[in-house]
Length: 92
Image (cartoon, rainbow, N blue to C red):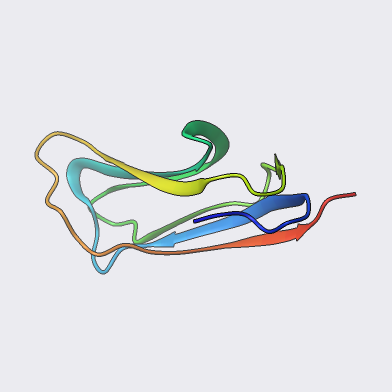
């Protein structure tokens, strides 16, 4: 995905799994800008959690940057559909 033609700030990441990750398992979702990982990330782990969020990190994104989300799973975790949301606001 390409960022807009104006500077923005990415924030407020929210992630939800359809069911818990499982004992000893985790899924980490991280915003990447131009293939570099950023601080906007969160991890869902264990046999109870379904969601995670990050409202602390603010990531400045330059105009026309390539943005993507990377999902890291622990060994043995099964592939699954992950829902995520985030917010882009105008850069100050």
